[in-house]
Image (cartoon, rainbow, N blue to C red; front, side, top):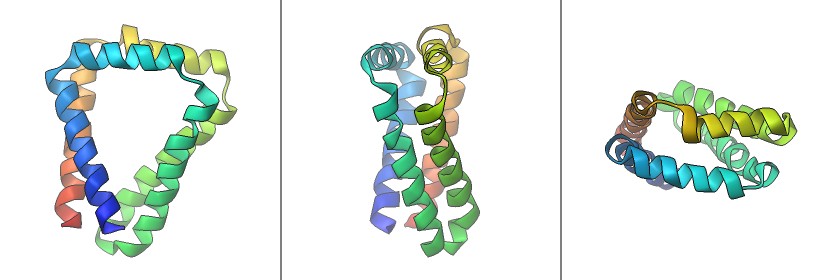
Length: 124
């Protein structure tokens, strides 16, 4: 479990850094992903990741609340993507791909980077 959390925190750090530095390229990649992705199949990713985080919070008591909250949010996101209105989900994803300002995306990159650093520092 420690190895999974370490690897995934490194992915968070990399994604957050890329979102801060290369906002337009990440937005372009996101736009391509959103237009081609099957939303119902995409729901399996956050749902399964959330389950792993919820299982992981039992093993890491010093990170219990952080992992629990992130796991709960990821499972909730997976459930929403699977059972939610497709039109509403498409509108939300398209807003992130086209409508969100550069400042909003960079703020999200900073939040992602900080979460990755926090988890990585506690895991190792």
